[in-house]
Structures are given as C-alpha cells and as structure tokens.
Image (tube, rainbow, N blue to C red; front, side, top):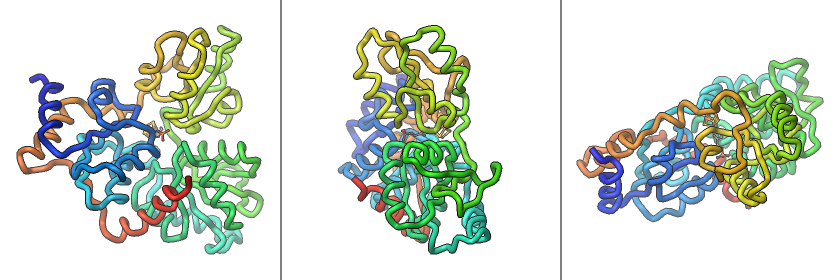
Length: 329
Ligand code: 13P
Ligand code: SF4
C-alpha cells in the first residue's frame, strides 16, 4: 500500500492535525501539519482548530496536549515512552521532596519544576505544590520565575538540564544521590535522571572535532552533560539549534550534539553529528508511516485507536503546572 498517498487522502477527508516532533523519522516529519520543539508543539496544538490531534512523538507530549486541551481527541500512532520520563514517577517525586524536608527544608519552602519530559502524574504533583513545567527552550525563564518565590528549586527529572541552567544563571546546584547534596547549600536540587541519547556526547567528541577542524562550532542540546555544554559554542533546544545552524555561514563547519534524525535533516554541507555512535532516540523512532496510516484509518472507521486519556485529578493539577509555564512569555 502507498501509505503516503492514503495518509494524504485521510488528512483531507478528516478534521485532523498531524503533529511531529523534530526527532521523528523523515517520512513522518515531512507529512506533518505542525512541527516544532516541545514548547512550540504545546502552544500550537492549544490553538489548533481541529478536533483530532494525531501526535507523532513520545507519550508525555501527547499527554500534555490532552491536559492543556481536554476537549480535543488526541491519538498517538505509537504511545512510545521517553526513557528519561520513565525514570521518575509520583513515588520518586515524593521521595525527592522528603529528601529535602529531612534535611531541614520545609515543604512550603520548596518550589518544584519538572521538565516537560515527565508523566502527567509527576506534573500533577508539581502543580499541587505550586510548581511549574519547563522545556529546554524556556528553562532559564522558568527557573528565574521560580526563584522569585525565594524558595529552593527541586528540579526533576533531568539532572543535566537542571545543572546546565543553574551554571548559566550563576546558581549552586546538586544532584540527589550524587556525592554530598545538601539542599541547604544549593539553590537548585536536581533529581538524578538523564537522557541516554544525549549522554552519548562526551568531551572527547568535542576535542576530536576541535582537533580535526580548529574553527568548527559546537552546538548541543541542554540534555547533554555539563562537561560537554561547558565546551560548546551554543546550547539550545531543538528549535534553537536549528536557528543557530541556519544562521551560520554555509562554509562554517558545525558539529551538533542532539538526536540523529534532526541533525541529519539540517543543512547537509559542513554539519556533523557530534558522536561516533549514531545518537538515535529509540522511542522517537518507533513511529512509522504505517502506524500513522492505521491511526487515521481508525478515525475514518469510527473506532479510534491509541487515544490518550488522563484522569480528572491528574489532569486538573498537571494543567496548573503546564498553564503556569505557558503564561511565562
Ligand atoms: P525539545 O524541547 O528541545 O524539542 O527537546 C525534547 C527532547 O525530548 C529532547 O531530547
Ligand atoms: Fe526522551 Fe532522550 Fe528521546 Fe528526548 S532524546 S525523547 S529525552 S529519550
């Protein structure tokens, strides 16, 4: 079957919007109506007029759309779970809060911030405590906003993102379970989660490219280890990386530290993948054109598959945390 042709037919016949994150396979990415980084996708879906959102990405992304716009029907061709998001659940979140209270920080003096790469149940816990969601594109502003409360920031689940922004902002940070982590001595207390894809990039990779091409620029995602971001010329979200690379002179060599599908799609000349190991996100790569076709066909057949639902309590508090983020410009 010609899946591409059938998808185009179904797209024209149904009130659907196909959404794709930058890390999706090219054939899926190219057929989408809306593309973007996590923040852009959350905003664009909120303003989309169609009843049905077909989200090609990882679970927390589709879940966030459903929480922000409960009236929408959100289907995911694959409900693939981001490995980092899986590292924390509401129990681990409670344990992280307890870690701080046991070390003398009262619960009312903790402001939790969760990276959007987390389950709705974690976002709900954060929302209940007056906290916010952030993405890699707005973490600086969100942490800054959080600090206005005068409270300690509990940052979950990505230790790298938490530490990278703390360093950028001149704040003290520590990671629970790694060395001495005294919440009284730090401004940002991070949960020990990480992205296995972005851990592939190492200082040795940066040194390799700098030795080979002394004038090369290094651009990386903030999910990379602080030892790597410290050596980079630019650190940014997926959209910010695209903008940075696009604005470089075409003769300027650049090595990019983020997921393979995106780097491979960037301008072909003088762009390198900052790793000798292909940095593919297994869960982002799960979605195929066939999955997308089956999902659209299920709507046409009146029996939708892979629909995202979030229970009322979780949705109510996760929405608070997401809305607080969306209100920060
Ligand atoms: P962005 O928000 O930068 O698109 O990143 C999402 C993600 O999962 C990166 O690994
Ligand atoms: Fe999750 Fe990492 Fe994949 Fe992003 S690249 S979706 S953080 S596993």
